Image (tube, rainbow, N blue to C red; front, side, top):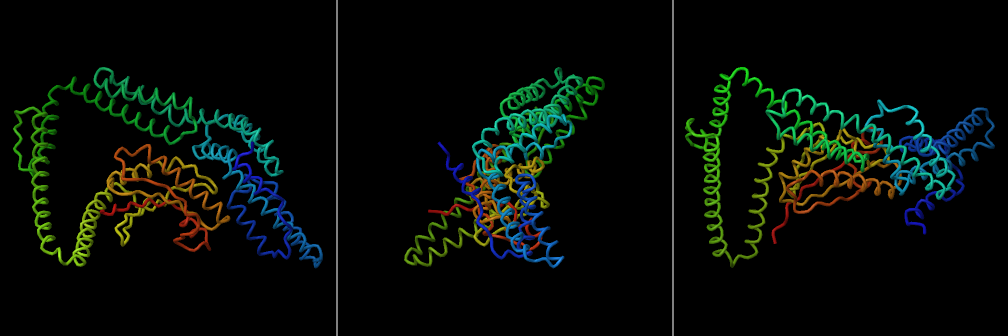
Length: 472
């Protein structure tokens, strides 16, 4: 039984109607659009035919033999439309989109170090699928996908081993040489456990580059921490007198907290006791602050009772007070957000309604692709921190595109990209927000014209919107 996706692909690839009166400007615009949509990869025969027919028409017009030129221009436009439709099938319709995503993921991760003959074989199998889709032989193309997927999966395992497994194993080896087993057994065990989980993930899901990256980065951090502890242990073993200086330094750091809290730390007390004193001081500070807030709220409640007869004015007053409170809280958290948000990749703004908008400008999706580039993971990790900072808000992840392609394909693509960001963030957020949803806006909400490449790049974006929850 044919799936709805398969029927969609068949509709996209129906023979295009003959065009009448196509102009040179129209055909050239279609060539530009087709190249931007990566038709050279996903519909090379149709794209080449359209370019050839355009060039033949231009030659005839230059030689003043214009009788056949209009028909050639019409044919060129039809070929280019077929190229764009084939590209949409390869990038938006399953199972072809899964194959294209696997290929994009591998190329974005880097193919250096891979055996050229294996890469060439995978590309040949991919080309066979593309050839059948261009010929509208979708069932035959679908049967050939498994071979291409297997080839790319094998390459993905090899690439992931180089990018993610080797670094953590190298750090673990460094930690063992530094005698971490003696001085930092827990940190070394954490790193080794992550390396084991990494091998399992690589075996079962080599295409999950985001999770592979996360496990590898955490394991490397654990191993580096083990090296640091072991190095300190060896140094103290060689020069025991340095222990006193180390403890003095730690006490000085704790006093940076204790002095503002007006807590006296006795160096004769254990570090655990000193930390407990700091904790109790902070608890007391929070309790006093809460008591002051409760007093203020009690005064407000009394005022509300007195003003009950002015219900209409009171409603407005409550809304204004709530808005001021949200604005104060938002300003404080925005100040904290600015400490770890990279303005080169995340633009932060505040709407009139109090929404915090994180505009992600550095994701750099490939045209027609919803695969997250590995270099975007660090940016998304900072976004996850921002969401945890505003955990009492609703989170909406919006995908936006430029105007290349048609409305429907752009909406689908923007939704896939928003979902890719959603899934990446969902795996990393520990303190869940009130709600989190993803939506594709397509090309409907541009922030710049689509006339230039720079403006189109601005319009291709992800926005994470953190909205206050209205009081009932």
